Image (tube, helix red, strand yellow):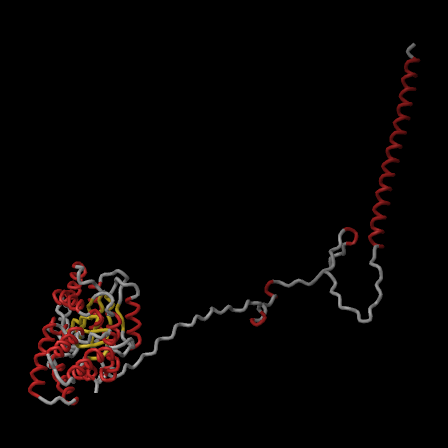
Length: 430
């Protein structure tokens, strides 16, 4: 009983072994087949890559030079075996020569041309300058000088003629009191003289006009001070009279007379006033002391005098801001500038610049300025553009100070020392 079951089990076991062997053989066959397929496929790809070539080109008559692209590195089976190359140590490597160094060219900084220094001018001499500029007084000559000569040359000098002479003098801004004085003297001398030839009339009128101008007055611009302190000249006036231009021209007058000058730009209210004054100074080699726009003018004036002392200059010219004579605060500030400057020493000159074309209004301005600062001299500008040459007489009588300089044009050397004789000669002609 026990024998049969045992044999059946063995029979089944043998069949299972046989089936397992067949399965293993089948798997092995499939693996081998896959390996073969992969090998064949790889061979075809490699073979195709090796056989791929460019089609041959026809040789040209002149073969062009073709630069071959760099070879691609080979990989896989085509990779080449690295070759052994001799290697050098760090000590064996030599540095390249200096000239072989690949250094970038030095970039030069752009050359910026500096502005050329202005050429220093030599002003023309001041002696006899008014005589050379006598033609500039043509308007005043026709109105005052020649007008008077024409009236005095009439055959009969009746009351109507003398009234016309008086009116001519008043129109020329000689002033009431000087006009009456001149007419009385002329009437007396004409009556005593009797005959009136043109030469006699001209000489008579010249003598009386020169006497009216005050030939005895000192018209020198005083700049002489002790050896250790320069002469100090302050220029004052209302707006628009040409103070800054007059200060620059006065510097030329002093340089022409052999003086060394320092300019003080104390006009800090008008834009570019300091630049304008500095330009005038550079043209004659004069240094300009200036400060910030809107700064304290008294401080700048003080520094200018201090700088003039340090440089041992002969003269310091101080240009002040223009101010209306009706502005009390500004006029008080002008007095402050004067007091501060006088800490170095007394002022030698305070010149009042007046516009000759303003006529009698200039006299009102002159009175107020004379009350604030002690005016020592007058500069009459634009005298060439007015028929009112008699303002010279009127302003001298009003202030009791002489006219020292007159402006007769816009040129740099058109500021002339005032000479009564030359002035009258220019008015009445030859």
